[in-house]
Each structure stands twice: as structure tokens, then as C-alpha cells.
Image 1 (cartoon, rainbow, N blue to C red):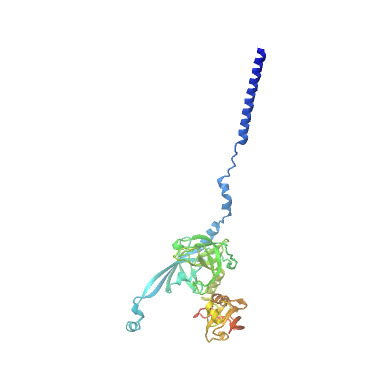
Image 2 (cartoon, rainbow, N blue to C red):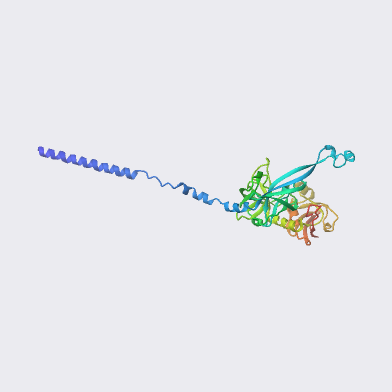
Length: 388
């Protein structure tokens, strides 16, 4: 009896012990399975590789382009009136025209772009002759820090373009690009010397093309960009992603005098044509349909004339010249050689680009009726705004 009791106790003890061991192993297994597994952490370099790889790298383009952009300074002598009495006829009768005048030195600073290895540089007219004085000295600072004298070849105030010549050979010229292929949103670099900080490169996009009616120049067909352009950038290069010259930085829109994200550049196709004419003729040869004064049509004018829209250019004065005989005061020019005329600025560009010696067909609204006139295209007079 005692033996059976002892055997029962032993068997129960062994069962409990085995249960404890089995339970312990199961708990250990459960803990192993249930333990959260940390996700693999990507290296920092990999986590940022994709966004950075998508950003454009223009370092090689900029390195090539900056070698073709120079700093330009111009010393001008401007004659000013020393006394308010200088304009008085009585004062000038007794003391002469020169008594009240004095000469002042005026220094203009900007940038320029080398367009040929033999030293031709394109810049803005207002950089070298914008103060209305006599240009006495032009200097250019090359990217290698050499300072050389420059010579003014010719200027075109209508487009604010000037052509310079420096006597240095084997210069790195910036290749011309085709500005007609520019698209809004395309990357561009602005290179120049803002605030005398030479070879400054800024990045932006083309914000718009064909900007006009800005009051910057007589002939306006600007590229708008948000690449930072500041005082001193004038005459510098606007470069595309291929490193080609697509514009000459000319003006900024600013309420403070600083960068506002709105800059304007003369398209390279226009600048190249101007530079070629200045080199060949020392002036720009533009088409003209005669001495005609036109103005933009406002809603008020359209209502008075009984016009359905403000498109076109209103002729308000016609001078007695052979090429303008067909036009009359009050005519509205609505088309030029089949191209619709939106406003006066566009008409100026179309006429100026017309072939000299040819004949243009004008769509006209006269006394409320559409008619068509044929007028010869002659060379514009330098004494008048070219094109009219």
C-alpha cells in the first residue's frame, strides 16, 4: 500500500516537472515568434539618392559659359545745367549758352558676352551709353582678371543693344542658341556681374516669351525669367541647358531696386541680327511703311470708332511721304501680310522685320469697312522711330 502511494507521488511529480519544462519552452517559442522584427533601415545616402538625382546639374554648363562673360564699365561725360537760370533766354543772351553748364563724370557698370574669338562683345546700350553723355572710356574685365580697353562699335537704342570690340585674340566665345525654341518652364542660367560680383550664376526658368509693352525699349520682344537678375547683370548672358546663348539680360521689374523674380532678356535671335547689322552697317536697318503715327486702341477708342474689339493699331497721323499715301488718319491696321495685328508694339516688330524693298499688304478698317492696301516697305529713317 505504501509502495503504491509512493509510486503515485513520484509519477505525479514527474508529470508536473515535464509540464513545467514543456510550458517554459512554449513560452520561449511564443516570445520568439511574437517579438516585433524591426524593418531594415536604408542608408542615409540611399534615402536621398532619388530626389537629388532628379535635380539638374548645370556645373559643367556654368563652368564653360562664365568664361565667355565679362564685366563692362563705361565712363561718360554728361553736360548738366549748373543754374536754373541757364534756361532763361534773357540770362543766356547776356552770358552765353555755356556759362550755366558743367561737365560731370558718370560711370556705368554692367556685363557683356563674348560672341566671337576675335573680341566682339555684345552688351546693353544703357550699360555703355545710357546716360546720354559722351562715351570717353570703356573697360572690360575678363574672367582671368585681365582688364582691357574696349571700343564702341555701334549701338541700337531701340532694342537696347550695343556692340563692343576688345583687342584680345583667342577668346572663349559663347555659342549662339535658337531663342525661338524656348519653352515656358525651361531651365535657364543668368550669368553676369551683379553689384560688381563677377561671374555670378543664377538659376531659374523661362517664365514667359514675347513680352512687350513694358516701356523698356522701343522694340520689345522679351524673354521673361525668374532667374535672379540684379543691377550689374545688364548685358550678361541667359544660357540654356546646352550652354548656348538664348538671351541678353536687359531689365528687371522691381519695386525696391532688387530682385523680385521678374527679369527680361532680349532673345538671342534678335540680338544676333542686331549685332550683325551693327558690325556691317554701324546701324540697324529696319523696314518702314512711311512716316505714320499709330497708337494702341483702348476700349474707349474702340467704342468711339464703333469697333468690335481693341485689336489693331489706330493711325492718328500720316505725313506726306510716298510710301504712306495709301493710309489715312483714322485707319485701323488689323493685319500685315496676312498676320493679325494685336497692338501697336506687335505692328512695330512686324514692320521692322519686313524685307526692305518689298511690298506689304495691309488689312485696314476704314469708316467701319474692311479694305486692303498695298504699300512699299522702305528703310526706316534714323530720325524717327524705325518701322513707321
